Length: 186
Image: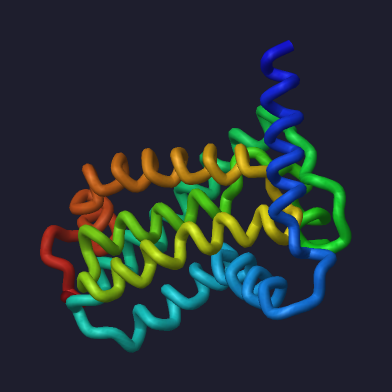
């Protein structure tokens, strides 16, 4: 009974945050941030940038890339275990068709993973930008009606856990990825 009340409160609060059906500047910002956390965008961008960046950036790019991939498997596993249906709505058809489950939010998980890894491996200015960006991505997913608040809270927690675990063994990842302890591109 208490679980049902929590879910009802979650749905009500999430609904109050929606701007998907309200044209205007706030909706446009929400659309931008909701899409800016897409995994395909991050993976493609990291691959492209990796080829043109100097050795100081490549460690961050490599760890982010493999972190995002690993996190995707974890998020999908949880989604298919929980099978919580996304909120009803018209916006975000691509998300609704390719991934009908909302719990946890992969965008929130990814955004916070990216920010945490940047805090450790990227310049401070980039980490600050990503720490501002991560909650905006998460809230935009609720605002556009493809997630509930609890989805982004769970996604945030999952992203933090996976990032902190990944940072414990990323040197081994770099060694494995390059086939040696001397990363020839650094």
